[in-house]
Image 1 (cartoon, rainbow, N blue to C red):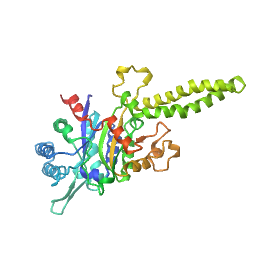
Image 2: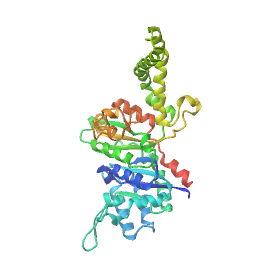
Image 3: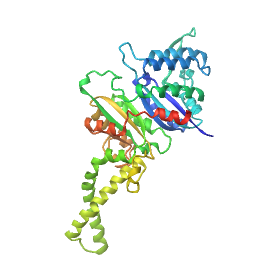
Length: 386
């Protein structure tokens, strides 16, 4: 059976309540689908109206919901009276029977009544009074009921992806905007080796910061990007790891030949083995983040996107850098506190689950390198439907 493309829109309410991690974790672990794109939207009034009209005309949607849902979309997704846009996060998933699997994981609107085996059962509400009138309605997420609906909705949102999507700097109100920082977090490739809830669980841990998620991108880092991103650590690795390599090398030689290595041997190793070992560790980091071994790739191919995926997130708020790094924990997971991302999900110094910027200046630099603003939704729509 051929693969399909499906979407999920995380509603502004679900984002405000920091339930996005739970939603993503449920989708990944129950559907077995591959997450292939993520983008934050601040829908314009035109996008909202056209989306609501698609829902009104979709005969595959239960009639009662077909009446409620457009009203909800126009009320909750459209900018407010002051022009403040609301955040909507789009996830794209790929795999066999993607549309049906997403629909099953999301569940029906009635699932919110004494049910928790679906996303809407856990996070949504569809409450009626004794006379049958609906008193409260919150779908938690929005998804296409059929492949035709997916094509139509994705066609619309891809049309607005450049203008309404990206990093939403002005989509949230914060108490003291003078102290607002932006920071970058990356959920690393080791969390995407197979469909599982770890990316969602890590997202959920980051939500404890109280910061606002204002940008997201499913990214495949190229070697050129990795070199720019991690380039500043290469001389550090040469210096710090080089000394370790020389010490180990001299110890091994002494054990092999039965005498202490003279200073000229140590100096020679410091000039050769040390930098080589540091570079090898640097290439290992790049390989982990891109899937490519840099020395084997010709210069013309360094711009090709990587073989592995990561989820790039942009957060905003007061002391954003410090808050995310505290939740992340130190580079070495063995030294991290219980409850931190790296203690819970890290393996070693390199395979340590996630990255976070160490300063506001580096955050801006890193956001630019991985191009969080860049649209990937239209690319996937074109690949499947054009």
